Length: 138
Image (cartoon, rainbow, N blue to C red; front, side, top):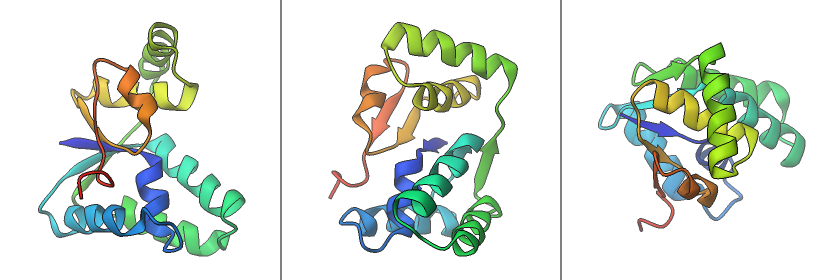
């Protein structure tokens, strides 16, 4: 099982971005069941924010598309707990990473997930997580 970062979802849902094709392919593999994934809950709100506020997509359309990902039987949603917040503080302090990336990493690590699909090189700072970049695999 691997984690998925918000940038992968944003790229997969935004056909105007050059990263769209490999990220959409990854999500299709997950939807078909050839790959399984875990996604921390914060990733959905971070994706929503980027698609609606930055890329100006329609709120209802974004919500529906994100819900379809949430409803996929091959995706496990990871809740944010007090212990994940406390671990995120430790990750942020130790690796000098931002709050959201630290929280995403903490949610994954609490669930024994040590790999994340992400195009964000900040995850490379977190030595307990291995970043897999579907964009640079091609």
